[in-house]
Image (cartoon, rainbow, N blue to C red; front, side, top):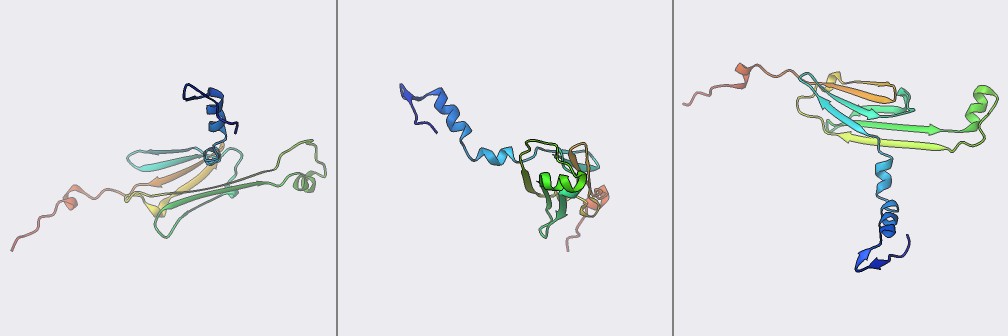
Amino acid sequence: MLPSRRFNGQLALTDFFNDFFENRSLERVANTPAINVAENDKEYRLEIAAPGMCKDDFKVHINKDGNIVIEMEKTDCGCKDKEKENKECKYLRKEFSYSKFSQTLLLPDNADRENIDAQVANGILKITIPKLEKPKAEDEKRVIEVK
């Protein structure tokens, strides 16, 4: 970061941008995939942006606390693996990449934990969490006899 220059007690605009872009806490945001959460009467839906990922890159499970854990890990091993497949390696520059992500989400009480479904298509991991049926209205109200 450049030394701060102040004009009338104000930080110079260039220093503001240097401070902003050198803030290391922003790195976590850049590596975190976008997540959409939606619901309707029958289910909750999670959509996680995962371009270039396939189903083998994901692990989805319910932990001991009853929360859903979504993990994804992608490794690009580079030219050696390509040579095994094609006996040729055409790219002149390819930067190695490694991505790892883990997110734990609290499930609502009415989530049907036994029937959760997860699918990957078109760069999006979609997780469907059915809702448990609501008890009948007559079951909700119960009169207690006073003795």
